[in-house]
Length: 409
Image (cartoon, rainbow, N blue to C red; front, top):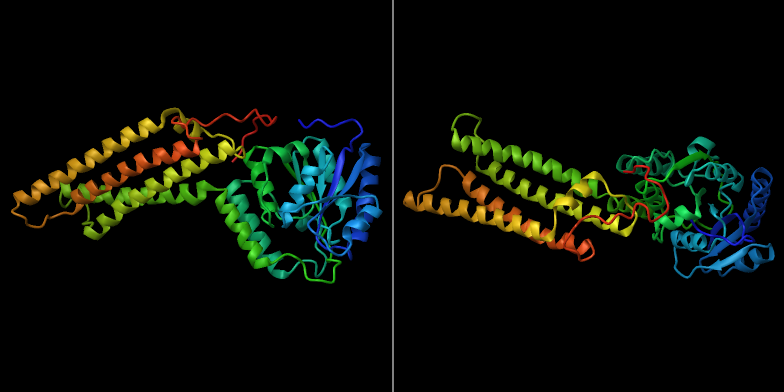
């Protein structure tokens, strides 16, 4: 757990800032009111921290004049500013909200209460708390947010109503454990995803959303930032990007190859599959096998990076698989493929170079060659993402971040 000197504040109220001089007076007054309520309800001291991303309108000087602490963050972007602010925050509880006046820091008082009660992250839900007229564009309210939150919940089983709410609270310990890195708006998704992957406790409370107090256009770009959120969800979900397509490809390809093989050995026992479907079946099995190895490699990498807990699948694979076993199995399968293709060539010669009645043996031999080569090369890939170690057993970081095992996606 992060150790704090006794004179340090308990709570850091953090705002990312880029030329927010119009809305900053309101936001600072609102943050001070929230700090007073946190003191009255919980007996905790607070600081107000402005994570400045290069303002040129005097925001820094004004914030300092109002007693806030200003931390310059050179790396540009919404997420970068919040990460810089959270890193600089002295409190063991971090409460963050945008500096455009659309969020009410008083909603964060209940969030601090949830953290005190044991939550690691507490999210606000604008859909539960209320959205003022004109505060959110219709495409964000009815398309973007529900769609992206739904995908996040499907992929990671987070159970969150509003994954992109701009007011949220997290313990400093949980923030450090998550290892957040996103510079843009996808930071909002990253925090929820990595907290869930680490098995942290995520609570949520209602939050209100009011109109933006600035006269200029917001920094948010809905289509660009929506795509950045979606691609980030995909990058952090190897199960859905690689694993699910792999299982589908293996299932369909295995059925096609099995039916074609049964037809080869017992003609008339099943409806005729045909050469084209046989080729497709072999290709699907090879593609599914490759995607499955990519899924395993991605899981091993994310576990080593510390933002995902090991699962029974990775533990089982790590217990049996190594570079040597992958190479040996790969060479064995390739040798079997060569044997099958040699028999195909022998049959071709024995038929006096006439076409075969079935393409299945040749498709099987080529498929085995592909699977064997993928095993051998995949072994090196997994050794690399395992930290250049021949044994793929996932390192057990489960106790290193100070959190008890609580499950996870």
